Length: 168
Image (cartoon, rainbow, N blue to C red; front, side):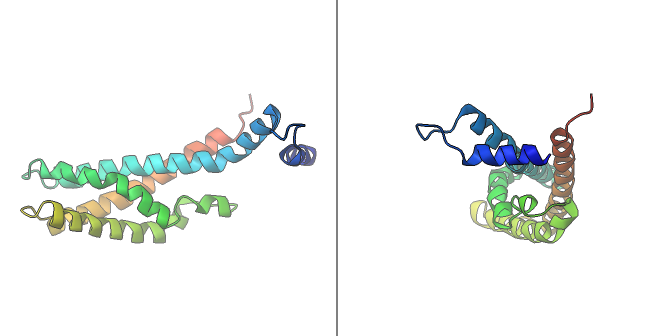
């Protein structure tokens, strides 16, 4: 293991005669960056899907008497990802040796509160005739919080399985 790590460091710091990285260097660096890079992308995709499902459940199932205004909430789904990024929920895994979804709970809770308030503001500004009633707001918060926790746990579990080499 130590010789492999030493070889990786040599390849990272060596350069070819023309100053361009060799194919072996590019492959080694890409392989080394995959766990963090891939996990962040997978977490963002899982978060996006969880938010879309949570908004659909909260605003369509709990508030079925409303029409197309329910689906306007889905316009806010892409904005949740930068908000979660601001809270550092995609960068924490690289900074810790052991990181679980439970470590994200305080930051995730606050981010979902802010996103739910943002959704309320969206309804107040974009659709002034319709209001996001309290039970829909609470349903949105609960379904988004639980959905994000489940999605993050599933993504971390899948990427951990993909990252560990199989003993075939």
